Image 1 (cartoon, helix red, strand yellow):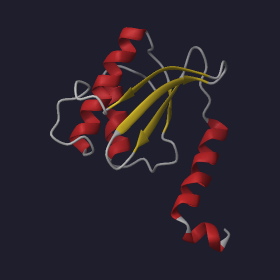
Image 2 (cartoon, rainbow, N blue to C red):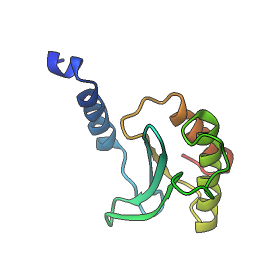
Image 3 (cartoon, rainbow, N blue to C red):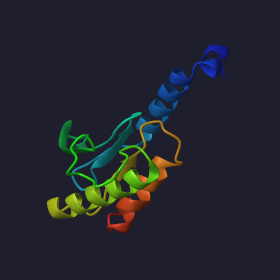
Length: 123
């Protein structure tokens, strides 16, 4: 691996994201659930890659999304995952492909994915 890539954390994330996106594609039957985390908020988008359109998106920017003291900890990601799972059931989505967006499958990402699965959505 190139020494510049080893040192640059942002570039390593981009390389991981590129490697993941080569394999993960959303279809009409199984759209892609994209998870994005920032220092303050969590975001999720349901995307159909065949048509290139976002079906719907969710965020913790709105206070009515989740009732938590903090919007960025494990409890918040668990509540957000349950909220997204319930909304996907209402839309009629039962299966999807999970895109972790280059993040390691640990912490808030894992908690979010487990909460969505708990609502009955299959990855």
